[in-house]
Image (cartoon, rainbow, N blue to C red; front, side, top):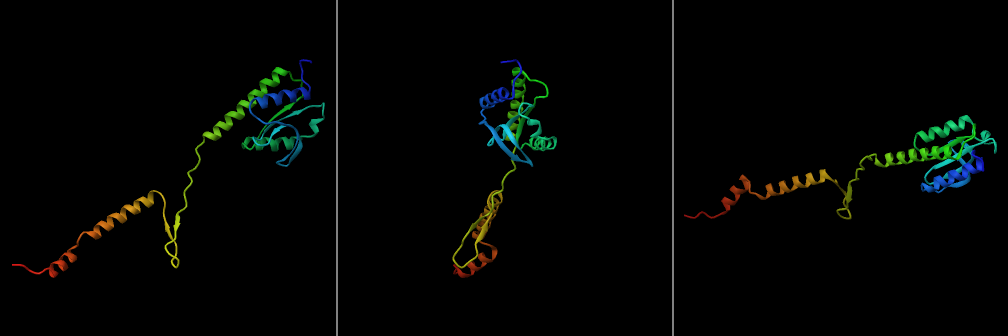
Amino acid sequence: MSEFLSETEGCDLLTRLFRARGYTIARNQQFREYGVEFHIDGWDAKARVGFEFLSSEDDDHDDLTLTEYNALTTAQRSGEMALFVIDEVEPVSKAALAAEANEFLDEVAAAVRARMARPRPAVKKPPRVVKKSAGSKPAVRPVGKKAAAKKAVRKVAKKKAATPTAKTAKKSAKKRPKTR
């Protein structure tokens, strides 16, 4: 084996590296997304991570045009996918390819961690609908802090209604027989 890798040797090395990082790489898959169609050398469809080794050996340079490459780059920048593209314009060594691939995989892992650490917006719960009786309209009861505040107001209102007011005190005084 020479110091410089063929496309087959390079793809075998990349497959081992990607699988060692936990990716389920399928080899030589048809890729059809973002207006781009070509045979990708390695792809994990679930993780949306893969690699393409462009070489003159397999005439790959005709498969992926500059416009298609730009479409894939745009998708990658938006975080929709991650694709490691090696263009064999100059011969690449095993050590250089492994170093570049590991750097790429480190960047992908960091991006995933950053997305997972990002706070997600709070999801508001919809109000609960409680049916009163068969013929009446359902009452909507709010859920959360506002509901607790409304319950507290209702309790205070019930307590005030339970204490006698000036009018009720006069009425009860009239009904009592006067004692001397």
